[in-house]
Image 1 (cartoon, rainbow, N blue to C red):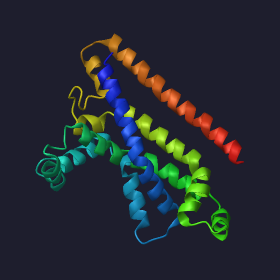
Image 2: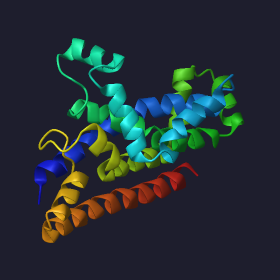
Image 3: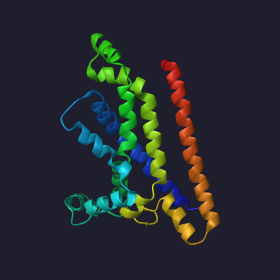
Image 4: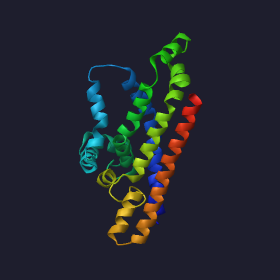
Length: 222
């Protein structure tokens, strides 16, 4: 059992979820309520990771993070080390690749809030921030929770992006998905089976908990 790879994956998943929460709420709410020129292009860009093969998407990210790219050079100048093949690069790639899993469920959750509920909040004198915190977020919370769990579970199991952007550096970019692949390649079926079972258990617990709390919150709000 490669516990270092497991805990690195957990750390990557938690940080990805924490960063995507405000991004998903802001952009999901914007796409749900606002009509603007180019909205379809924005939605298409958000959904792009769903249709591109992970290796293709990972290749473009690797090129973007490279030492000769503007992003890579900026990162090198600011932090003193390259972005590709580091945990930070893996985190940035994970955030980008998980955008549709975060934004789309949140967008649908905000779209499901009736207009008259939002208008009633305004009539009661609530500011936009108060309406968001007291009315919209509680009503959209099941969708937000679903988005966060999907991002977390997807991050734990992601392979192609991790391999392309991070490689397999122990303690730095070697996640549990990469560790499972390495064990299979080494014909160590016992270790691969243990890590696969652990990953399956964590993912199943996360998804089951999401359904449970979503139903409880739904009944309470209903």
